[in-house]
Length: 301
Image (cartoon, rainbow, N blue to C red; front, top):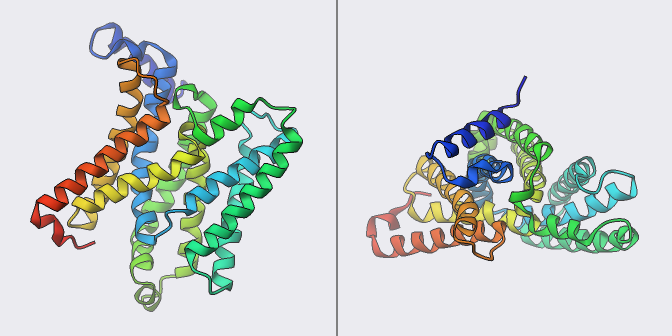
């Protein structure tokens, strides 16, 4: 059976040859980038709303940096350095769960605990990279840090689709419980919602999505794409439904525009950076809208 993304590539190429889409769609690498954008835009936009409400802004950054350590461990264990997904997912999930477990067992605030674990992951990753630096190309580390949505392959898309399916299935099923547990943990507990279990589920989902998006937008930028669209959406939202939809629209628009503009106008911009710049412009726009239109100041979220 032909994979869905292959069918989408063929449809895009045919529409391009027919003159309905730009010429760039004739190239597989550009079609792959658009497919990834259509997956990660809604995914990060939706999940970002939970990250903003839960005040986990730096959590994804800590997990993203832990991916470096995962790459080094994978190379040391003989995994292919171009796609060390087993080691990255394993280490980052373990890292995230230990971080959350430690939070429940101490009185440290989220930002302090994340700062501690972020420092540990960076120190461990940089130390392990010394052992594998002679066996891998330095550009591999650059791709982990900054990503390249224009170089994704079928394996990357398949893994991203699998993670998106798992995340959306679990997230849509538990979204209301996650939201209540984030906004009012005491009320959620009184209604019988297992708050700690919900927190662990959210941590796992954020870790899965972060690792799946590392090669596409990079460990440094995946946090920005989680936070900026959701923050922009919060500026102009007057309801939770609007908050989610605005975040999804802004994130998807940023992904698609950030891919197309540098290529269409031959601008010397990396795709990941261009995506974040578009999202940042959207955020500035929502700040101006909120400051000039009074009814947005009455936001309920």
